[in-house]
Image 1: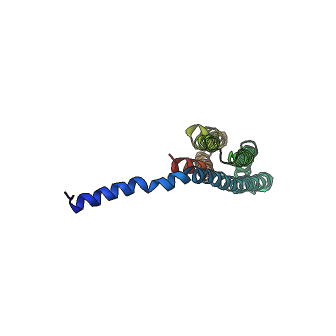
Image 2 (image 1 turned 60 degrees about the horizontal axis):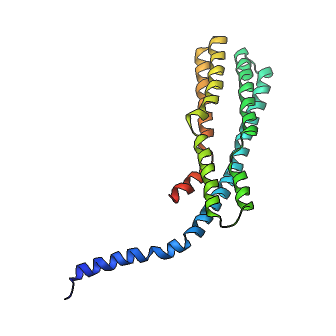
Image 3 (image 1 turned 45 degrees about the horizontal axis):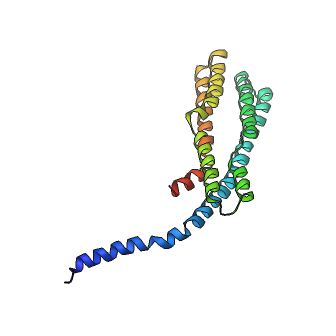
Length: 194
């Protein structure tokens, strides 16, 4: 007894669907290892650019604010620049003290056992968790405190509410931009293999 053509096609499609992934599964750990290695290497490269870029921005801001603190023509600009010196110095210090995890993780993976997929996955998951922590609400609390204090110093301490609000808002905007431009390669790689 012969089966209808539609059932034969359906059975063939199901069988092909079951058999086609087998070569992919055989290459899975290698592909996964290479993806993890590439993610950490790309993350380390982006972390270097990110570090250099934001360090340059904050160092430039510190230099400009230091100059304006004594050379600006108006008293308000000199006061704002003194507040800016403190904000820029804190941000620059943060760049040196709180490094991105990707370069160290990339070196650790390279020094480890090649093909140790479980170790690579654990390392990448730790870096992904750090990436998420660096974007959490808790990560924003430091800049919130600094920018609130700076805004209040200008608004209340110097009697310029509008300028204090602008200082607070621009400081928070820059801080958010810094957070959002951090590397995310580990999170993307982990999500790819889940």
